[in-house]
Amino acid sequence: MKCTNKKRITAFCLIAVLALGMTGCGGSGYSMNYDPDSPVSAYRFGSGDNSGTRADSFAKDLCVIDGDVSVNSIDTSEAEAVLLCSLNDKEVLYGKNANMQLNPASLTKVMTAIIALKKGNLDDVLTASGNVEITESGASLVGIKAGDTMTLAQALHALLIPSGNDAAVMIAEYIAGSEEAFVEMMNEEAVALGATNCHFMNSHGLTEEGHYITAYDMYLIFNEAIQYDEFVQIITTPEYSGVYHDSAGEPKELSFKNSNWFLNGNHESPNGIMVIGGKTGTTSAAGNCLVLLSKDASGNPYISVILKSSGREYLYDKMYDLIDLINH
Image 1 (cartoon, rainbow, N blue to C red):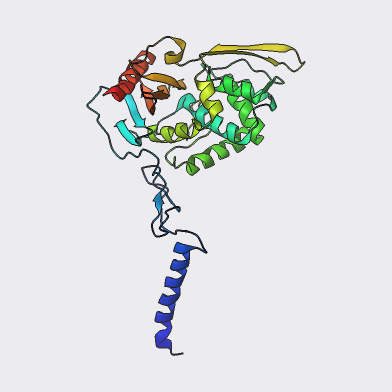
Image 2: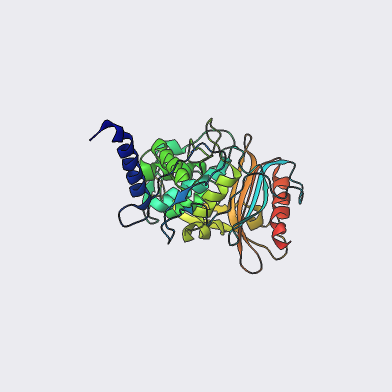
């Protein structure tokens, strides 16, 4: 064969390889470039189109935002990032700085709960190590001590209702053997969900360099969490009590109220809007944060997120205004 045909042969082979990559063997496969450092999460593609010739967007069942939306409809000047999404319509109703990376505080625990529900069994008994005895000033704790035992179901209630940082460590070590290994799971799950603008350094959300999230990524993570019935059941619970045991087998009482003002009676909801539940988060670095699942009078679901609000009263007043937009 003459050397002058080599380029033609090479081009033919390249086309054949690309064709195989596009069609696969009896299925739909796709090969395309993607920048994981894109400033907007959830720009992903996957197979599944019936025609076999076009990729379905990863975000075809999700809200997508790139830029602010309806920022003049309510005043959120004292909150860094705000987002309201209609889950059924896949529409962003309000968005401000939705892709800004901020400290999530205890909103982190939503991801902790996802990993626990995916990897654990609710009836399993967890034993606390000495690492649960967090001494950081202001850390929210339920009082778990080394050697204490409780079920995963109890630990999840302690994690999500009063936002126990000690419960987060207990869960992380039960699932992965160490918090470091658990954090790797958290970051892997975030990427799988398209939440590529967040990064976790711990399971609880206490301030740490390199630990951040965006309002949009919080929407993606929370949207995954509410697919678990146990998660929804817990976040709707106004108060909880139960019995666990210390290292000697003696009973100890768990008793706490939900830190969410919409559930504990400290703040009313807009007319026609039912707040199902959510997760709170507060540190000096993160400010006051909140993510909610709400439903309108017809039962349509919405996710709303506020990050780094200036104060707790402002947070709930503005969340009220935000979810009231559902009525308009």
